Length: 283
Image (cartoon, rainbow, N blue to C red; front, side, top):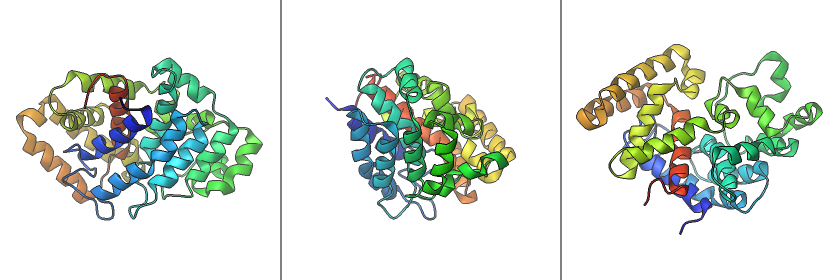
């Protein structure tokens, strides 16, 4: 029987192995500076931090350790957002993997957890939007240099996540009890086929449901909406079953345009973990 940390590791591997996931690295597609093997190495590197979470360590230090290990490969940031979702979920699984328990885990985070979260940004280059003027001292891109301002305001990690909504849907998961992640796990259980194929189906459904916030940050809300509208058309047609070539073409087009719905991939990884850990699916 796999441990929660092992299921989280497996979820990261299954997420990148699933294809097609339009705009994202998968087993058939690389990006210019980010390749399939970088994600495999990132997943392996994250294991120590995930084990810390499973063993009851505080969320912030466990997340920072996972990110530091993930970053020990040539591709830089592969799974930062996915680990930000997985760390509290793995911690919850040590007791009970449910939305109420996951909510209680993030509600218990501290200023020290938030400081560790900021230090995690020193390990990788994460694309984030410019903060509002009153939050400039707390710009996460400042890494550890922002910790004095963070401590002065007394913000816990959950409160930092709350400040990031609605522009970041990973943060939104933290403040909504991982709502989409748990729903997508149920969807994984209710579609047919090998698990990587199911993950591709769920990814397309998630992308059709909401514009990806990473795409909106990098390319603007209009492009994010365009991508979601196209995904919605394909999902409505069940194109992965009836016209897989259309989804493959969509995937190639987004890669060529440099459009990467990475937040949707992060939520897919979280859903895979929940489905594996809850035995909704088996491998």
